[in-house]
Image (cartoon, rainbow, N blue to C red; front, side):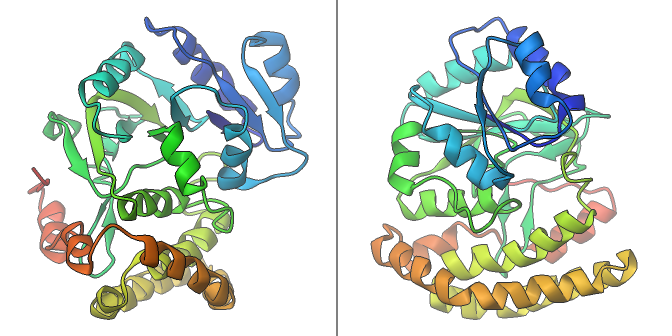
Amino acid sequence: MIVNYNGLHHLEECLSSIYAQDFQDFEVILVDNASKDGSVEFLRTNFPEVRLVKASSNLGFSGGNNLGLSYCSGEHIFFLNNDTHMESGALKELARSIEKYSTYRVFACFLLKFSNPELVDSAGDTIYKGGFITSFARYPASLFTSPREVTAACAGAAVYSKNLLDDLGGFDEDFFLVFEDVDLSLRARHHGESILFLPEVKIRHKGSATFGGHLSPAAFYYGTRNYLLFILKNFPLFTLYKSLPGIIIMLGIRFLQGIRLRQTKIFLRASIDCMRMIPEISEKRKKILSQSKLSREDFEKLLRPGWFRERLAFRKGNFEIPL
């Protein structure tokens, strides 16, 4: 499943890398979010085998994927960003891993920096105590050699069981984009699922290319707003209370980024919009936590300690990764 919005310049490489795989038991469904750059015409001419779903407007990553899900008939859904290149053998390894680790219904693939595949883009998302989050971006890829359970799966390259997605109701469209995948993963966790990172399923990723990079105004707005939303929506009350100091620190870091990027107004608008959404998020939160299969203690076991220590170690070139 691929969602595209004015991503014509990515499609040739992405789709060619998919169809060059030595595993071919798949269907590519691409949802186009009302692109105006000729993406639809390019697909019809050059990749007629792609099942094209045209949205009438830009539904974002969340809404685009949800629209595409209604066209999916497979047992597993592979969410893939359009600014990616699938390494040789990735799909064959993915199929083998799904069969081997059949008790899992969510898998995180290994995203590598597009321009330097020796560095990590995402090795599975890890959430720390205090609400800090990392994908281990810019760590040496050579450190990640074994499958391991992770807190969340980056939907730039992630696989979910179709049955599980039906149970979860897909992505939360209020997120639009950014952290919608973390929210989906945490809801899967509340549902009782575990998430397995697969280091052999390698995909190169340009990263936030569709909306101008991770420091663009759109990325900064949704990153700020949705960071608060996924925590407010999924953290048990006492865990949320204990995480407040870390959340405040993270917001302070975002504010300083806003000053550096001259995006303080965007930071304020994102914060205000988040507060406006609290009543609706609170209703979703009640439903999630009332049906959760995790106790508060179980949920807190998903959160890794030592964010400050690991960040300091990272700056010194001492890379620490979870086993």
